[in-house]
Image (cartoon, rainbow, N blue to C red; front, side):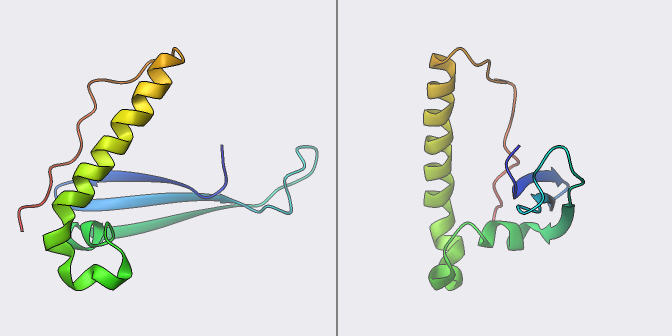
Length: 101
Protein backbone atom coordinates (compact mmCIF):
# COMPACT_ATOMS: atom_id res chain seq x y z
CA UNK A 1 0.00 0.00 0.00
CA UNK A 2 1.30 3.41 -0.92
CA UNK A 3 1.99 5.98 1.75
CA UNK A 4 -0.56 8.79 1.94
CA UNK A 5 -3.51 6.58 1.09
CA UNK A 6 -6.95 8.06 1.76
CA UNK A 7 -10.34 6.40 2.12
CA UNK A 8 -13.61 8.34 2.21
CA UNK A 9 -16.70 7.07 4.00
CA UNK A 10 -20.18 8.53 3.70
CA UNK A 11 -23.30 8.45 5.89
CA UNK A 12 -26.21 10.87 6.18
CA UNK A 13 -24.59 13.84 4.38
CA UNK A 14 -21.37 13.58 6.42
CA UNK A 15 -18.00 12.42 5.11
CA UNK A 16 -15.19 10.83 7.05
CA UNK A 17 -11.77 10.75 5.43
CA UNK A 18 -9.23 8.33 6.87
CA UNK A 19 -5.64 8.87 5.81
CA UNK A 20 -2.78 6.42 6.23
CA UNK A 21 0.80 7.70 6.05
CA UNK A 22 4.02 5.73 6.42
CA UNK A 23 7.21 7.47 7.53
CA UNK A 24 9.30 7.21 4.36
CA UNK A 25 12.63 7.04 6.23
CA UNK A 26 11.53 3.95 8.21
CA UNK A 27 10.48 1.51 5.47
CA UNK A 28 12.97 -1.29 6.12
CA UNK A 29 10.71 -4.32 6.83
CA UNK A 30 13.26 -5.76 9.28
CA UNK A 31 13.17 -2.67 11.52
CA UNK A 32 10.43 -0.85 13.44
CA UNK A 33 8.45 1.66 11.38
CA UNK A 34 6.23 4.62 12.01
CA UNK A 35 2.68 4.90 10.76
CA UNK A 36 0.26 7.77 11.15
CA UNK A 37 -3.49 7.62 10.76
CA UNK A 38 -5.49 10.82 10.39
CA UNK A 39 -9.24 11.37 10.52
CA UNK A 40 -11.08 14.30 8.97
CA UNK A 41 -14.82 14.75 9.39
CA UNK A 42 -16.46 17.02 6.78
CA UNK A 43 -19.89 18.36 6.05
CA UNK A 44 -21.33 17.61 2.64
CA UNK A 45 -20.67 21.18 1.47
CA UNK A 46 -17.07 21.15 2.69
CA UNK A 47 -16.39 17.76 1.09
CA UNK A 48 -17.70 18.77 -2.34
CA UNK A 49 -16.14 22.25 -2.21
CA UNK A 50 -12.80 20.42 -2.31
CA UNK A 51 -13.59 19.10 -5.80
CA UNK A 52 -12.69 22.46 -7.36
CA UNK A 53 -9.37 24.24 -7.22
CA UNK A 54 -8.67 26.99 -4.68
CA UNK A 55 -9.03 29.72 -7.31
CA UNK A 56 -12.61 28.63 -8.04
CA UNK A 57 -13.92 28.01 -4.54
CA UNK A 58 -16.38 30.92 -4.75
CA UNK A 59 -17.98 29.24 -7.80
CA UNK A 60 -17.73 25.66 -6.57
CA UNK A 61 -21.48 24.94 -6.76
CA UNK A 62 -21.56 26.07 -10.38
CA UNK A 63 -18.48 24.03 -11.31
CA UNK A 64 -19.25 20.90 -9.30
CA UNK A 65 -21.40 19.04 -11.89
CA UNK A 66 -18.62 19.17 -14.49
CA UNK A 67 -16.06 18.00 -11.91
CA UNK A 68 -18.27 15.07 -10.90
CA UNK A 69 -18.79 14.10 -14.55
CA UNK A 70 -15.04 14.27 -15.21
CA UNK A 71 -14.34 12.09 -12.16
CA UNK A 72 -16.91 9.52 -13.28
CA UNK A 73 -15.32 9.40 -16.73
CA UNK A 74 -11.83 8.97 -15.26
CA UNK A 75 -13.03 6.14 -13.03
CA UNK A 76 -14.80 4.43 -15.96
CA UNK A 77 -11.59 4.56 -17.99
CA UNK A 78 -9.48 3.24 -15.11
CA UNK A 79 -11.95 0.42 -14.48
CA UNK A 80 -11.94 -0.52 -18.18
CA UNK A 81 -8.13 -0.78 -18.10
CA UNK A 82 -8.25 -2.96 -14.99
CA UNK A 83 -10.96 -5.21 -16.49
CA UNK A 84 -8.77 -5.67 -19.56
CA UNK A 85 -6.04 -6.93 -17.20
CA UNK A 86 -8.46 -9.43 -15.68
CA UNK A 87 -9.16 -7.53 -12.46
CA UNK A 88 -12.67 -8.03 -11.09
CA UNK A 89 -14.51 -4.73 -10.54
CA UNK A 90 -17.28 -4.38 -7.96
CA UNK A 91 -20.20 -3.38 -10.18
CA UNK A 92 -22.58 -2.92 -7.24
CA UNK A 93 -20.77 0.15 -5.84
CA UNK A 94 -22.83 3.34 -5.81
CA UNK A 95 -21.43 6.82 -5.32
CA UNK A 96 -22.93 8.86 -2.51
CA UNK A 97 -25.70 11.07 -3.83
CA UNK A 98 -24.59 14.37 -5.34
CA UNK A 99 -25.68 17.33 -3.24
CA UNK A 100 -28.72 19.32 -4.26
CA UNK A 101 -27.47 22.85 -3.59
